[in-house]
Image (cartoon, rainbow, N blue to C red):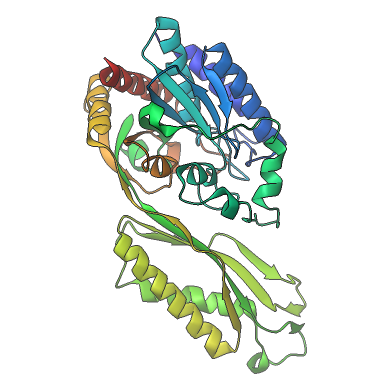
Length: 398
């Protein structure tokens, strides 16, 4: 039988690794000291639960049941300024259900904490490489925003790493997660059963102009990289108007301006460009508009233009059988207080779907806040989500 108190205690223990000191926030980016310490603690909990502990070549931590099993989990790394539940909730819920199953003599439930879901080196890096969407050899060359390579970072876990885990042993995958949006919280609902996960595209763009004196260079002679970025952003919003839907989103989330000094006309800017939608056709249309718009700005202003690698994942529909089990359990545990809904956020389940049926379960995010120290969920909703997940596992394994 699942133990809600043990579940909550483990969640708070995991929060202690990389605790920010601001609210319940955590600073636990992939391969940081806090991340590795958290993963070593998870390994000990998995072993104590009777699971076979395994670490794959990229540092994802697995707790494996014997024989064919249902796989549960998420990730335990965080954003540079992250919340305590993003990913961690799914890992600890999986641990509690697997532990209870071991104590009861079945069913067979395995657990995973994927590495670098938050994308320090790309997009859901650990599960992306495991799924074969990107080879390890290619991923080795990925860099974070400070220029550290993926190869250098994962070397910190080389003493723990073994071989790849065979996905054929799993009958399906369910990932429990916070919603990271406002809808459940606003409606006063306890649970969301995910229908599909949107697709995502992400790339870096560099505009190179001419660095010069900010006091003596006339405006009409400047090749100002930041002014080019500002114009691109304005033009892009207008260009998207006839293509996007109300659920489409796009973000310039990271900007690196050089030399980033108040008395120098910026000579170069590198920025992230990310867009998300449930339609692969629309994602491609948006890419074409982005490239055309930035090329026009660069040409008009006399700047050089360069692109980084285009990273992305396709939209994924949740498996009908797994989703149905979650829906039945939601109605049993929270009658009339749940909904079916899409996921606008990206998750490891997208990559796992290449190997097996997948489904997802959401609990509310207070105020819709995530990827921030203020991220939180009422503990009653956390336990309700655990109950729904456990009920779905029982339906699928009996």
